[in-house]
Image (tube, rainbow, N blue to C red; front, side, top):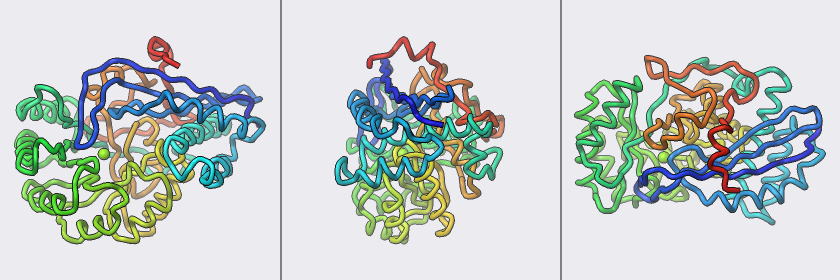
Length: 372
Ligand SMILES: [Mg+2]
């Protein structure tokens, strides 16, 4: 089988603004990559579809650049393609960033082709260890007019209506300070009760001193994990924090390479890796990262678009949680993906056995928002 074309499309739509410790998110955006083959099979990969907003208009030129290198290649050679367009291009494109995010979408599209061609799910091809995986609901963002009461309503909705056994809220907005954020944590804990798993996420907003201060406070409310306390390359500081913290340290959603995760684990800097298959360059590299995590006794809870993370998260024995973005973070989520992923009554999702990724983009909906 040979690749005959690679197509890039960008979509953008309005939605209410939200923010975390370090970033404000306005419009919803999605970048789609279609890989076409001489056998008529098409594969799809994408970036976006979560709360985060990226400058996706600069993604298509990278697809243009990669297209020349992809035409004529066998899409089944996902690992070789990831290497040739990734590692081998560090001198030209840099070690990671938009180039590797685009490469992720290409790699995912090739895996989609591989699955469809073999009549197997990507989940199965990656190991297929778990048929169901526990989700946690991402949320608790800061928003205009959102106080403690609204935060409590949100997490309660997630528990009662979405069957969540675990919920996450944001901390780290400099306007809140430790005291302000701890009021939010206390409010969330009161709302959901003691039996629901509660996580917090600072999106790299803090320094070591403040992270240590937070970890002391967070354990009083039985917080399960403290995510992305500090900027990702503060390896030594992650080690110091993890050694001092009774709350587990989770990080990794912004890690581009196996070597980043290796260095993090060499410093004993995390209990849980939030590897994201759309940030590191796709399933091959992500699987290398999760293999290394297994060796080191570190569990995995992927970050990002759940439709793309599920095949890997549930493929491995140490896939502990799947992050689940509800419609609340983006109303278009209700219709953007086919079929819609809905947690079962116990907060787990069941992995589909459809060939390929198992989810596709709903182009009838998205085409209304095409901007490039
Ligand atoms: Mg996060």
